[in-house]
Image: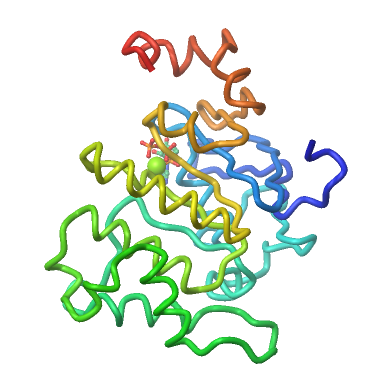
Length: 250
Ligand SMILES: Nc1ncnc2c1ncn2[C@@H]1O[C@H](COP(=O)(O)OP(=O)(O)OP(=O)(O)O)[C@@H](O)[C@H]1O
Ligand SMILES: [Mg+2]
C-alpha cells in the first residue's frame, strides 16, 4: 500500500476562483512514485484548472501544492517543469512548421538535472522519440503528421523534459480505438520508466485499465479517491458522472 511511502505530489486544500466562479474548492490528494492516478469528473469539474495550478500557469487562490516536499506556489512554469512536473495540453500545443525532432528537442532543453551532468539534449530527444515510436517522423513538419502521431509527439515532448510526474489532459480525445490503444501502451512504457502519471480522460474503459487509483471531482469538489473498482461502485460517483457511461457497457 502507498500509506507509508513519501508522496511525489501533495495537493493540499487547493482552491481556485475565477471572479465569482469557484473552479476548485479545497481539493486534497497525493500522487506516489510510480503511480498512475486517473482524474475524472464531468465537464467543468476543474480537472484542467488543477493541471494549470500544478504546472504554475495559474496561481492558487488558496492551499498549497508540493512536489517532493517543496512548495510549487512561488515557482514559474519553467521552474516547475525543470523540477519534474510536466503536462500535455487539451488543445494541440505543437509548433506546426517545425520538425518533429525540433518540437521534442526544444522540450528537452527544459529538463532539470540539478546541476549534475546528464545525457545530452539530443540523446534525450532520441530516447523520447524511440519510446513514443515516432523516430521515423523526426524530419517531418509536425503539422504534416496524423492526429495520433501528434499525440505521440506531445508525450515525447513531455518525456524529453525528464519528468517525475506526467499530467495528460484528454490525450485520447479524437483518436480512433487503434491509436487510443497504442497511446495507452506508450503511457504504460512511460510509467515503467518510473514516471508517475495523472491521467485526465473521459473514456472510462481507458481510465479503469491504466489507473492504480482514481480521484473524482465534480463542481470543484473531490467526491471520491480510491481503487478503480471501488470508485466505480460509489453511488455518488455513479450518480454525478458514471451513470450514463456504465449504461454504455463500460
Ligand atoms: N481562465 C478561466 N476564466 C474563467 N473561468 C474559467 C477559466 N478556466 C476555467 N474556468 C471555469 O472553471 C471551471 C472548471 O473548468 P475546467 O476547464 O478546469 O474543467 P474541466 O474539468 O477541465 O472540464 P472538461 O472536462 O470540459 O475539460 C469551469 O466552470 C470553467 O468555466
Ligand atoms: Mg479540461
